[in-house]
Amino acid sequence: MASRLFALLVGIDNYKSGRIWNLEACADDARRMKQWLVQDLQVPNTNIALLANKEATKHRIEDVFMSHLVNNPAISQGDALLIYFAGHGSSMLAPRDWCEGKPRHVQVLCPYDHDTKGPEGRVAGISDRSLCSMLGELSAVKGDNITLILDCSFSSPQLSGNAHNRRGVRCTATEKARKEDLFSGLWRGAIGKRFHGKHGFYQDDCPTHTLLAACKPGEMATEWKEGGRFTQEFLAMRKAVPLHQLRYLEISERLDPAGRIPQHPVCLGQHRDRVLFDGIPFVPDTNFVPVEGDKDGLRLHMGAIHGVVEGTEFSVHSHNRCGSLNPSLDSFRVYEVHPTWSLARRKSISKHGGRGSWARITRWNTRTPFRVYMKKTCSSIFRHLFCRPSPNELDGIPVKEGLNIIEVENSTLADISVGVHSRAVRVQTLNQLAPPCRPVLEIEKKDKERSALILDEAARYHMHLHRTNPENPFRDHLQLELYLVDPQSQRRVGQNLLVNGKADLVRTLGNSYTVVLRNDSDRDLWPYLAYMDSNGVDIHLLYHPRPSSPTPTLPKHGSLEIDLRSYSLPQLDSGFLKLFVSTSYTSLGFLEQSSTPIQPSQPELLVPRPPQLGHNGQEWDTALAILKFSNVTQGRL
Image 1 (spheres, rainbow, N blue to C red):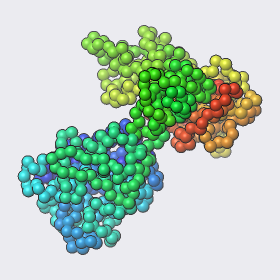
Image 2 (tube, helix red, strand yellow):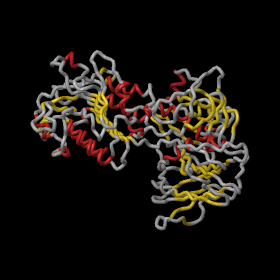
Image 3 (cartoon, rainbow, N blue to C red):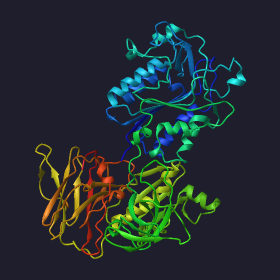
C-alpha cells in the first residue's frame, strides 16, 4: 500500500549572490530527508519533489509548491504533506503597513537567487507573510495535515561580518533588497489578506500547519559537514523512539542538538498535540500477524495455509506499524500446526524477552529447495578470483536462512537465474509451469537494500506458488473460470478461457477480464485470489474477503465473480492465478510483495480477525491457473 504522504524538500548550499556565504550540508540534509521518507515510510519517489541549489529559485519553489501540492489531483483531503527547507534564513526591516501587529522585522527564507536582481526586481526571499498565505491555500484544498520543517534561523546578532563566526550558521544578512522588494515579491494570494506578522514564521495558534523549527527566535541554526544539527537529531530520533506514537510537542522536547551555540527546537501550531503526520504514513504492516498467550507459549495467527510448518520461527514485536521503531522482543519456534493457526514455544529457555502482540516470520523452514543458477559474468568472475566468498552469500547477494536456497550448476535444474553485473543484478525466472520469460527484473547495484532482498523474495514467491495441501480436500470441487468483458455492456462474453487450468490470451489495449470462482462442495469457503508475475517475484492480491464480512463469500454450491477491470498489470509474458480457500476466515495480506502495486488499497485487509481455534473441521486448499500472454501491449487484465 503506497504511503499517503507528499513532500516538497528544499536544500540550498550554494547561493547565486557572492555576498552570501555558502553552506555545506543543506542539500545533503534534503536528500537524507528524502531517503528517510522513501526507505522507512515507503513514500513513492513520485510523491516527493526535491529542489537543491540552483533548482531552488524563488519562482521555482513557488511553482513546484502549486503543481506538486496545491494542484496535485493525487492528493486527497487529509493526506500528510511535508514542506522542508534547509538553507539560509534572513530578516529585513518591515515596510510601512506590511501587516497587522506592525512588526519591526520580516522573516524570510532565502532561495538560491536571494538578494539578486531578477526580472521583477530584486529578490527578497520568501517572506513569512507569503509562505503563511501559501500554506493557507494548501490547507483549504488538501486539509490541515501539513508539517513545515525549517532548518534555518532569522537573526544573527553575534556575526558582525566575521567570517569565522558565521561559519556553520544558517542565517545571512540581506544587503541590497529593500522594503519595496518585499511587496513586489509578495505571494499573489497574500495581497489584501490579513496577516498578523508580529512573530513571523513562529505563529503559535496557526490552524493551517504545524511548525517544527530548528531554534527559537533570536537563536542560530547551525550545521557541520555531517548535516544540520537539527535535521541530524531529527533523523536520529527514528532509531530511538517509535514515531507512530510520537506527538509533535514531544519531538521538540526530545531534540536537543549539542554544540557550542545554543539551539533549542520549537514546535508551534494548533495541532501540535497530534501524532507526527497525524499517523498517516504509519500504516499496518501485513508482514506482522497477531499472537496470543504468555511469553512462554504463544498462539500464532498463521497456519498451514500461510506456509507455516513445524520449526518455523518468528520474532515478537510490540506493534505492527510501518516506518516506526519496532525491535524484536523475543523469538519463538512453532511446534504444532493447524490450518489457520499454530502453537509455538520460546527458542531459548534462558532468554527473557518482552511481551508483544505481533509476530513476524524470521525463518520459514521450507522443505522444498529453491534452486538458483548464478550466471557467469565478468563481474562475478572477478569476485571469485579476488574476493573471499561468504558462506551466507551467493555471488555477493545475501542469503537468508530458512528458505532452503541452494545453488545449482545447470540452468535447466534451476527455478531462477541471477546475473550479477557491474552495475545491476538481473533476475529471470525459469519456472517449469510457465513458458520462458524475458529477464525483466533488473535492480541497480547501488540499491543495496533491494538487492539484498531479491533472493529472499524470490524464494518466498516460489514457496507460495508451489505450496498445496497434500490432502486436497476440495480438489474436485473448486473451479476457476476466466472471461473476457465486453467494454460496452460490461458483461462477460464468450466461453471460459481457462482450459485444463491454462489460458492463452492476446493482450490488446482495452481488454478486460473477470474471474468466476465456483464451489461445488458442501462447505462454505473463504477465498483469497492472488496474481503471481512469472517474470519477476511480484505477488498481488486481487481479492481478499474483508474481516467485516459476516459470512464466507464463496458459499457451498455457489460462485463468486471477481471483476478485474480496475487492475492494470505491467507488460508480461505469463503469470499465475493462485487461489487459496479455507473453511474459516484468516488474513493472507502478508502474501503481497511488489515494487509497483497494481490494485487499489484495501484498508480493512490489514486488520486481522482472530481465527477459529477449533481442532476439528478446519480445512484449506489451493487451485492454480496459468495465463500466457501474446502480442503484448499496454492493457488491462
